[in-house]
Image 1 (spheres, rainbow, N blue to C red):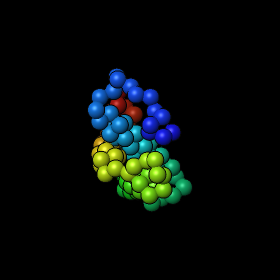
Image 2 (image 1 turned 90 degrees about the vertical axis):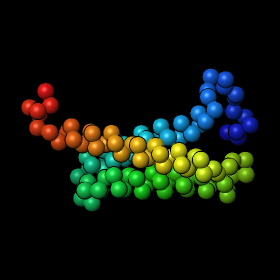
Image 3 (image 1 turned 30 degrees about the horizontal axis):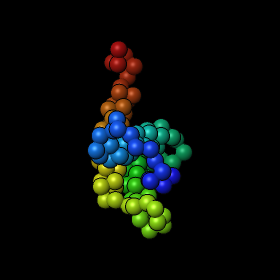
Image 4 (image 1 turned 180 degrees about the vertical axis):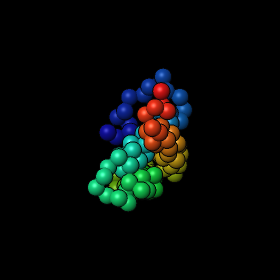
Length: 111
């Protein structure tokens, strides 16, 4: 949709779109890291899940902003959006390490 066609919502605060960018990339990073860690086909992905997930998320966020800037005339690429993507990406690493620590403990210690 063109931004001018989007409905105006009074419930949202200024900068809400940046918050949404960060949340989406937070979730994306965690899920990619977890998926890479749990898969067994590619050993390098299993050894370095956070590295690959971070690279993919930052590349994807930057690519989307460039496409919005250069391809779509009715969209604008913004550094602020990319920064929000990066913040969400780096924050998404934290719960992955917590998750990894929890699942790597023997079953008896968790209870």
